[in-house]
Image 1: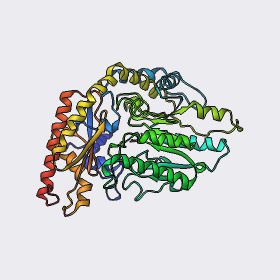
Image 2: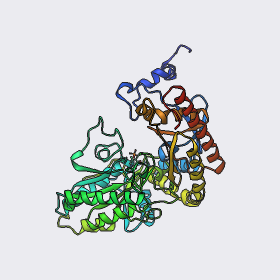
Image 3: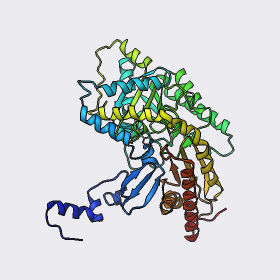
Image 4: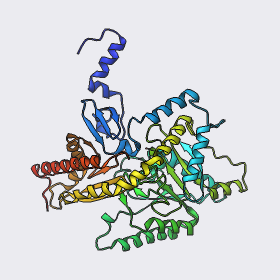
Length: 470
Ligand SMILES: Cc1ncc(COP(=O)(O)O)c(C=O)c1O
């Protein structure tokens, strides 16, 4: 490497030395022993469904960034909108002013959201959207003079964010091993994943069990103490976990019977992932009291999220005995004009054929991925729309099944990358949610890379004595 001759060269020189480069950046979800030293893949550019890493390898972006690059990478139209908005109004404070993109986006979302969800509050992402929904529920119950109605119900297997309150709702394995949370406010129900239902129970009986469990919790705690139930229609980061067919409708009914808000966390399922702008009603037949969203609303081009809120909640607040009570909640970047302008154009792109494309191609995507179930290491492939989870199962006779569970997703990702595919490893699972622009032949390439990656992983496990096919 050439010796640096000036400051700029010195900085470049320093940046070029990869171990140094990594010293200053703390990446997401590190372990204590590797904090600040992880050597994650360095992505340098991207185009449509592909990303390119620093060695020049072109990989299919299997997770679409983080379930977000819905219209694909490097979309000229969204890039132009961002620049144009930045050059007309870059920012306006949401505390004292409003702006046109935010007002227009709120109107567009109200037109598309189910039921009476006619009001939008914009945030900076999914965690802040969930946080906002919960704080609004708490405020509502204070204003309605029932301050004891504060408990929040979530489920094992769920992911709702990384801020303190949103993270307190999470229920995936190890979410709370080393992390604190507002546990006193939260009650967790069983994970509604039929693949891991108690042995001997049919899916219908499992559904009954889940509903009964919720009813029993309400009896135990009292409906007057439970404020809200929050659920992802499909538990995404838990491994694309699909609940039994009638579960969401039945849970929604139990909430309505007991005056408990139903919050649908659609951070992943909205904006095209399931072929619709919002999936709650169009796909699952439910009308929630609130919907949280983020990610696909801007296709990941700008950090934006939000909450759709019902007329009922807004009307109750307006008519309350405390008209001067202040909802002291706002973010510097709430209603950001650039984010809102991008979201408006993004929705237009989705509605200009992309939603239809998803609805048309999703059965092919699901069917192709399900062909992988013939690999002995694969326990189940499940999903809907353009999201799928591939769950690997450890053989009961494995010498160290726990370790196998922990690393198998990462091993598959490693081998898939050798075959041109980036996957999202998740303990013993891989999650696939490609950009919505993906074509049939690209789905074929993805499936082939997955097959090669899983088979190579199985060979490694057998060679290392960790696993044997049943
Ligand atoms: C369902 C769900 N809710 C909330 C979040 C948190 O969103 P963010 O990472 O934008 O804060 C996520 C992130 O993956 C999510 O999947």
